[in-house]
Image 1: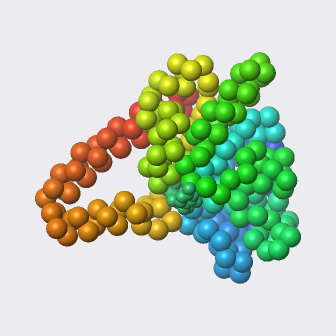
Image 2: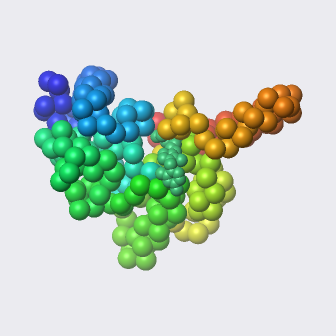
Length: 227
Ligand SMILES: Cc1ncc(C[n+]2csc(CCOP(=O)(O)OP(=O)(O)O)c2C)c(N)n1
């Protein structure tokens, strides 16, 4: 863990050369695997979000900016990089680090969560509060493709569903949408789809084809402006 040993804060992370980041991500993954082997926990989601979390911590300043994780089960790398590395072996143990974001645990955690699909409406709330107070920090919602399929995410009215909604309402939020191979398990809708597929494969194939195109359009709707 040679490189990770030198990173004790987001500022340390920002000082690393870009070429060192793949090594750091590999060390973060190793630490997450070693710890969850002993303590249990959400392994796949946290492994899938390592690069995204490194990128966000290098781009934003979460001492000022706000970050809202959806579900909160993908935050292990975030914990390791925001001053909780030395306590990481207490993950999910009594009196130890929570498996989810907790405001009591760190000033870098801004929203206690555990539910799926709440991040977008919470982020809009944080953005509204910021605007009412004439503040200027960023608000970032981190949400997986699985959580995006729930009605609560759709009801928030943020990009992906209604592309112009936040601007129209005056709220500026950053939505970091990430895509894994699947959710923590096959979703309920997916199970129903598999049963339907057994009965009417042609119908399901056509439906999935249309839906896949919609999702691809949605996922590529907003390329980063300054990449
Ligand atoms: C209200 C609610 N319903 C269901 C769950 C169970 N659940 C945990 S994670 C998850 C979906 C996660 O999928 P995704 O957004 O793709 O994130 P990933 O696991 O890929 O990081 C669900 C439905 C939950 N936490 N809260």
